[in-house]
Amino acid sequence: MARVKQYAVAASGQWTDEEEGRRRLPSGEVHAWEPGLNQTVCGLSLSRSRLVRFPHITWPDTFPESGGAADRVRRQCPRCASVAGRRGQDARPRWQRTNPRP
Image (cartoon, rainbow, N blue to C red; front, side, top):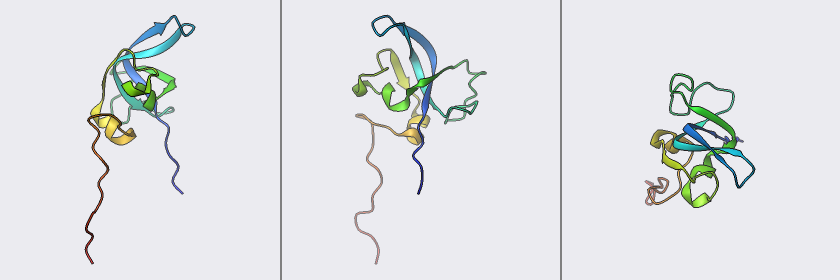
């Protein structure tokens, strides 16, 4: 049985939420990242791209409807979203065959 991967977040910036006890949160453009690897899901190098790692934030928390860490997120990487999962108005339904061949 395939195991569902849990993606963390790498972002172009960070900010500190004073209301939640000085918690670091992502800002700017966010990318999906597998902890233990030195690159994002879309292939960007974390150090060369100067992305900040957030291992305590999961990928679904960056979507605006989640109400989680998405307060200052401006953009989700579309390539990362296609791999890690996309929810929202721009999400297309999964491909499904409606009339299979015999």
